[in-house]
Length: 85
Image (cartoon, rainbow, N blue to C red; front, side, top):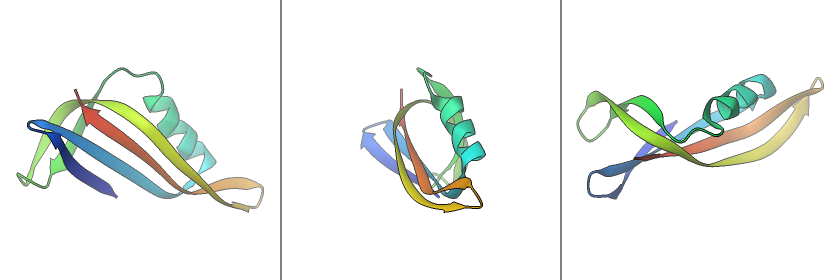
């Protein structure tokens, strides 16, 4: 799921959520965003209806531990906010 909000004029925030994410994918997302000062993100802008590429920095990550299945960690969700630079 993706949510696009306007933080202030000409600056947006993109919030991405992965549902029922396994441990390997969770680590891949965190690894791809950890320590990054900025990232180039391509997304479908609901305000314009077109694909755009903008520069964002990753914000806080919210994780909720849901359950264990066959000794594998499964998380209910991982949400990462990206704020436009």
